Image 1 (cartoon, rainbow, N blue to C red):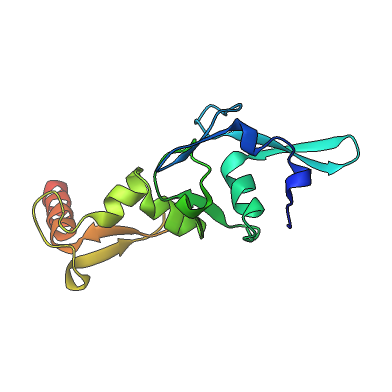
Image 2 (cartoon, one colour):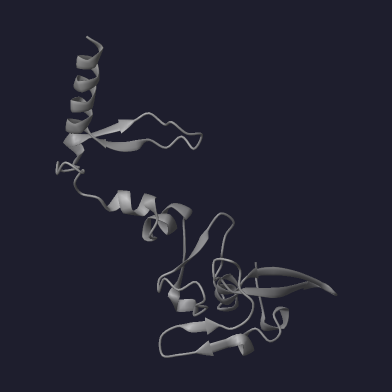
Length: 151
């Protein structure tokens, strides 16, 4: 999608530029992301997140399925060089959610190193089909405890 200033009249008027982030002062969604309107035809408008509009105005492409990731970690920021167009997976792993936290772990809760030789990948339990990493030593301990209880 190619976007020009004429498609988003007054967009930059709703932005406060600081030395670091450029803050969106217009309407925001419940997560704090700015919302801007794009003119797609005569008397026809659509709403997009302001940081995506900013990236498109800077001349960069945002292909279908890509995410626009805030490198500054501020959802209200619309500064184009603070936003990276990435895969959904990379966006999630850069974040602060459970998937990101678990991916960054180097040791299990018992202190065993999560290295290739000590990893077991559990079969997917959900529809997304993703396998979860499990400490092999802890998994063996749990299975032994379970089997001992059955006797």
